[in-house]
Image (cartoon, rainbow, N blue to C red):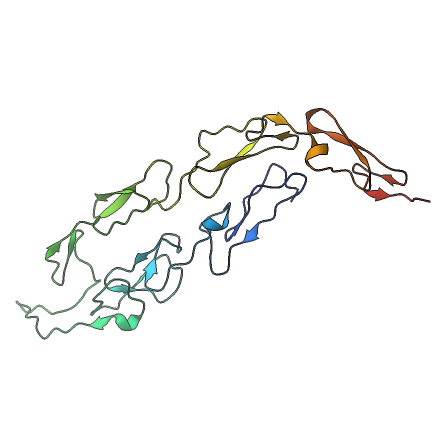
Length: 258
């Protein structure tokens, strides 16, 4: 609320840049129709659109993957897809309606030994697909990892090995470029939108790209009001020399001119 350290993270679906000197920075809402996946977003570029119908993601926001075969999703911004009822299936990925789940036609299928034709749980053993689970596949063929992450098949599922500084189960979160950056004198590093862009947010009384310089508050933004003179002190402090009829730290109180 003061714009000074310590600071709070902006809530989800909002963002804020660095605070301005002598004031405070409010968290701004994301552009209409976009949302954030986590707290502390630093710019509108981190506001993402929700997954469209027929798609899903870990966060419910872009980037998204199509619903797998035999599943559908009719709603926006979902983290999982809905499985079709038993004895129904879909022909394609990314289906959005339960009506896309077709009933199984068993007439051309000749089961032997008194077996019954049916779809049960829509699942083959891990690594297999096809109407009869006869086709062997690699679980990584769908490229489930984002941002150059490497997919590794593990016990019927997969894991993503992310590039340096990328995080998330599918490497969906960008790098924290503040790692290894020092902002002296109590400054805090802020990871800005865009690759390779950071900024030091300085404590009151310090300035410069790395917060190494002592600030002159009288030059940066005169805090004294109502015609008062600003007198700089050590370590970024100041005092105000008020005109007659005014008092207070910043000469903000009118005690009467007459």
